[in-house]
Image (spheres, rainbow, N blue to C red):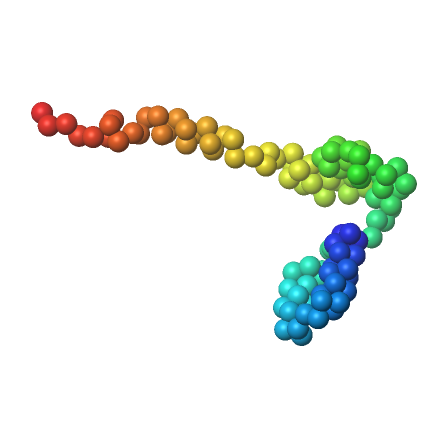
Amino acid sequence: MSFVYELMHVMKENLIRQGAGDWIFKIIQDRWEKTLKLPLHAADAKRGFGDRAAIAARSTMVPAEWWFMYGNQTPTLRKLAIKVLSQTASSSACERNWSTFALIHTKQRNHLAYP
């Protein structure tokens, strides 16, 4: 999240240099306050999460594996994170179903013939 905070700061500086109006800053500030500026987003790495090995592994390991390795001190959060991160983020199963459905339900097959 520190990357997002830094980008927000850079974006605001660029808008100032370009002479953006106050109304643009108001929109950005409202959005920032309502959605992005939450304590959860600025959480610090404490206990095992602040371990040098855990911090170094954040950018090299798959997230579900990272939680399996370093989430021992928070077993409930660890279990939830592994479940959420192990879900596939793909629509291929749905696409397969729709493709099969399209083969079965065509205009020609759905056309009712007279007896």
